[in-house]
Each structure stands twice: as structure tokens, then as C-alpha cells.
Length: 450
Image (cartoon, rainbow, N blue to C red):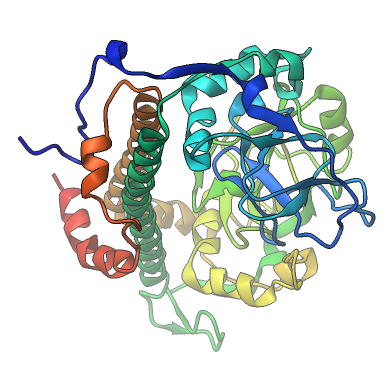
């Protein structure tokens, strides 16, 4: 009977010769330094180890002197000792250098890629967590002696190779499906913007404005600054995060008209109080991203206290002129979004300055008409929002499936050798993803009517 790519048989491993070894016998510390000519590598939970670029640079500044950075040779195991409990580890893809705070080991796996899948799998990440300790979860430190006592079960080299080949193909197919769904979400969000634009321009008043040449009767076009008491961005320095405390939002936490708290960070009370002296976001404000994903707006409807980073502007509104719900919708319209992109400056760390932001043209309805427009816009977006929510959940399920699949395969609960033999050497490509998704957009919207 044929075996599906994603339903390999479960097996009894009692008769198989899987070898148990400690990480002490597999890992040798590497202490080489003083190679600032090598590329800078970093490690993340989702991506493993990769060459750092300007776009990937997080809040951590790169020092001028890299002489003390550790050398990681291609295939070495790199571990962020403060976040090993989250799975922030992997094999170096090329020779490079990493932070002195990372562990670097020469790894003695018969098939290095199998070793990476194994150590980054959920069961073994849990073992790294058990070997870490500290006062706060967010500041847990991996104890190297306890880590090296972790035992792993290894199949023979040929099965390691089969597992690595199978998982490369499985990951490619899952990544392709996720990329397709994310592309669909982007198209849905764009369609929602277009529908809002149609509502705005459904009148016959000629404004002479480049961005909103026609608006509804009674509407006008004004600079954003006209409806603001003030606009203040978040603190201009990198905070130290805590595992609990006051939520600290960055641009990635704001989607067009929605929140995204998948990767929410926190700062302690003392730091939050320091930020409060600059700006304190409150219900009724509008947040507007001015760096990262520039030009995304969200009205604050949260009761809980929170703070924001420099790439978010907190807009304090003249409420007699504009409601937060109305301003959120018009700022997310295609014309306002395009203006935000044109006004963004910077070769690497791009930012929409507060002054340029205030010049953005916005359509403005009379106060008594704004609530009606908000209702119309929400009704128009309801079907799209339903499909978007469903698609996001499908992405979550795919990610959960990947986690379970990898754990089952690398721990020998399923046998993938028969499937691996049938697979080509290179995983399938992503070449047709975009065209395929463009074709199914209409079908997805139709499903949302059910």
C-alpha cells in the first residue's frame, strides 16, 4: 500500500539499533576569535542560524570592534544561551562570527542536518529548558555542564540521511503552503483597502487634491496634522525586556485595523514609568507605524496599560474633528498608505518622521457622518475579515503540524526511510506560489459566504 508524504508508518523501535549518546560526546567547544572579516551570524527561534543583514537587525546594536566575537565554522552548533529554552540554536550555514554571549560547538553528527532537526525539535528544546535556570524566564541562562549531560538517541547514518532528506521536503511543502496563505492574506488586506477607497470617493465633490481628487458630499481633504493635538513616538533607545510587566508594542504587533500579539514583549514597571514621561498611549488614541511596516494604523481600544517603541507614533486626536475609528480606517486606505511609503526616509533603518507624517493628506467627514461611514466600512470588510481570520488559523495549524511531525520523525516514532527513497534530492520550489494564490482569491472569498 502506498504511503503518503505526511502519513509515514508508526513503528516499534525496540529492535532497531538507535544509539544513546550524551551531548558531551558529540560537542566540542570552539574558542577561535579575532576574525572580524567574517560575516556576522545571528540565531533566532524560527530561523536557526543565518547571516545577519540590515533588515534582520533587531534592537541589538553591532559594536565597532568585533575582535572578541566567536568564530563559528560552517556546520558548528551555535546556541543563544539565554534563549535556548525557546529553541534559539542551530548549525552555522557558513563560516562567520557570533556574539561572545553565544555558545559555539564543533558538532560530531554523522549527518549534521539531522543533528540540527533533532536539537531544534520540541522534545529536545524542552531538555534545553530543563538545563536552564534563572530568576526570570526571559533571562534564563543555559548551564553548559547540565546541557552537555543531555542524552540523545541517534539512528545509523543512513537513517539520519533519510530523515534529513524527508524533513527537507516536508518543510518545503509546508513552507510553500504557508507562503501561499500569507500571500492570500496580503491580497485580502489590499482588497479591503480598495473597498474603503471606493466608499471614500463615492461622492462628486472635486477637491483638487492629488491623493483624494473626489470625495463624498460634505467631506474635505486636510493634512493629518490638522486633526491632532500632538503626535509623539516611543522611546529612542533599546529597552531590556522582561518575561512579564507592561506590554511593549513594536510595529509587528499592529496589522491594518487589528492587533497581533504572537510575539509580544514586556518591560518592567520602572522602565515603563520612564517611558510614560515621554508618551502614554491611552484608549481613544491612534497608533501609526512609522518604521518597520510603515503606514499601518490602529485605534487604541485596549483598557490595559502598554508602551510602544520608537517606530510607533501615538496620535492624540482633536476629538471634535475626528473619531479614532474613522481615522484608523482612512489612514489604512491605499492613498494614505502610499503617501506613508513616499515620505519614509533612510537607507537602512527607514522611518516616517513625525513632521512628514503630519503632511499626509487624509479625507475628513463631518463629525456627525463619521460613525455612519465607519459602520459602512466595517460591513464591507466583514466577509474579507472572516476569510483572513480563517486563513491565519490555517497557518497556525500548519505550524503546529510541522512541530509534531518533526518531533515524531527525529525521535523515531515514525519510519520515513521508504518515503525518502522516492524523493528527489532537491525539495520542490516555490516558483508557482504567487500565481496559484492569485487564482484562488475569488474562490476563498466565496467560501467566506458560507
